[in-house]
Image 1 (tube, rainbow, N blue to C red):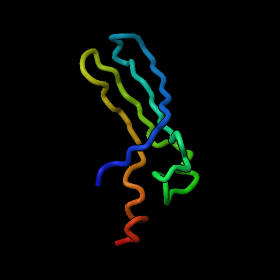
Image 2: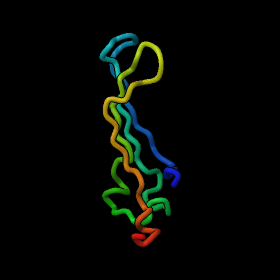
Image 3: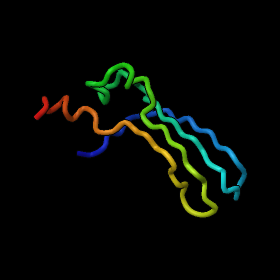
Image 4: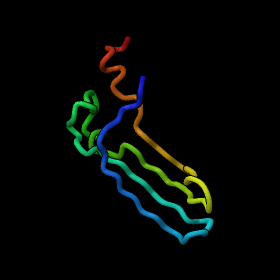
Length: 84
């Protein structure tokens, strides 16, 4: 099954200077429309909570390296299938 794609609000904060080995950023994502049909079967706590919480280390070259990423995944499958 393909991952859910939902409109989200992205909040982030960067720290450290360019080239600093401790430089990184924090990213949080929240549902733009918590009562949208994409969230059928989820409680209010999940609808209004973070869909993604990530800490990333910035590298001198290349993409950011994830240090710790927590995301809500694979919801609704049991709800639509009725458990089968």
